[in-house]
Length: 281
Image 1 (cartoon, helix red, strand yellow):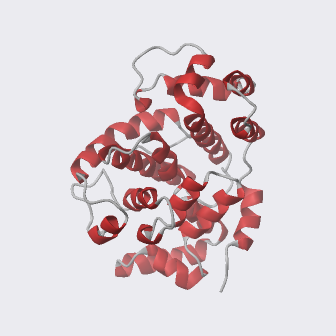
Image 2: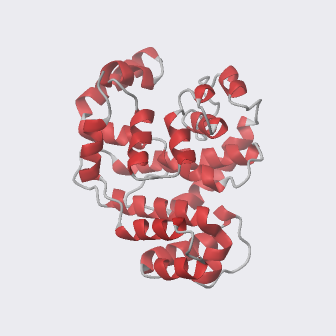
């Protein structure tokens, strides 16, 4: 059965995470480093420094006070949010540079931001601690599709056509055609970047959260984020209640999630823009 290995080789050439992200990640993971050292590493990159200050003052993170220094921003956001935020910023820069690929990167990033805000809205609805960490989960959840679409556009068009004609889940056609699906590929990509396992697991099991060995609830939220669209009058009947129950989620208010996601989307779009991004809401 084919695996994702060939794709991972191509990803290494297609997507290279900047040195500044790697340096920040290593500093966060170093048990002997402190906030002062982390601030010093971040300050090397003026663009990331400016973006972090903007995010620290953004309603997206629920801030009401003016944060006017990087030291305060780093202390306020904390290391987990700093890591996730810098990863999101650096990926938006990476996608900006992908102008020569035969793939609609702006639409992909639009959809990724939408998935991120839906995931965050779901986490808030379920009173999950630190719902901001679910934003990055949703944001990265579809990266496997991007790579498959760039590397094998003809095959991806084939499975998309099958999906649209039958209404059966897209990942089933991907497995029969590629030997794996976008969730497996996306998780393997992130694993190669040494991304935290809570993110990897949530993405790997997003199509079957009930069988996730850990981080089951996170996977279930990504499952919902890939199926709920705030720009529709009614949510499509694509969510299986039994899957959610087996993933430790009883029920939540879809309308509330939809309305909050609409509000969060515009703010997130302003924080993580790429050129020519279409407005969906």
